[in-house]
Amino acid sequence: MLPKDRIDYSPIPDRPRLVLPGGARMVVWVIVNIEEWNPLEAMPRTVLTPPAGGSPIPDIPNWAWHEYGNRVGFWRLLEVFDVLNIQASLAINGSAIRSYQPISRAALDRGWEFMGHGFTQKNMQKVENEREDIVKTREAIREFTGRPPRGWLGPGLTETWETPDLLAEEGFDYVADWVLDDQPVRLKTRTKPILSVPYTQECNDVAMMLIQHNVAAEYRTRAIDQFEQLYKDSHNSARVMALVVHPYIMGAPHRFRYFREALEHMRQRSDVLFWTGERIHDWYVEASA
Image (cartoon, rainbow, N blue to C red):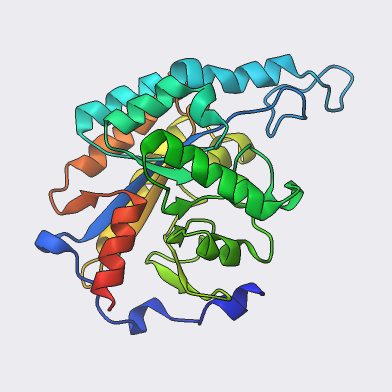
């Protein structure tokens, strides 16, 4: 199914008013991405190129660059979530559940949501059997947490033409790959609809730091600017803002303060909710019924 076959065009000013509980105006959704990079394959992203070029295997410096995030960076980020009392969503590779079990345990103990993020960090178009990959990811999370994940984020937001269909058929309630709105959107599938919950490429440390090569402070500046505009937009109908973080990027010492300061700024507003993706899903389904 082509993208425009899955969604109806809907100008946001023409929609029915969305109301959050308790007089709140908007929701901030924080997503922490935990991935396992296979040293037997080319690295998903790189910070250092070899002197002779190419994509060497093994690629120790780039594998280690990412591994720092799971060994150190995540725990730095976790302190901020604890201090500010924020429950995040953990978008995690199915294989990473056991490989980085202390991270999984820390998230579970804090009541975080677990989202499927592919079984390994590989484009969904390159996965040999997509349904099998989705099921393996779902079952890895179910085995560890005691319940299946309700949300899905493709590695690098990648999908095939039938990913939403497979997700709906395998019991997922929402997907985060469709970054096209500030409110949830229902996607058609060949069986039942699946909800698109607003993710972000704009307030995403991969885009800001690794692709656009901004200085570390850009994360704080852009996140706060995005927040303030969406807060203004939400004066008559609720908005959702996603904030995306990878421990190997914003968990680095020289960047960390800008992630913390962005969250501290947002936390000052009493009429802003910090929710997980599944809570956004449940609110929207009820509010739009």
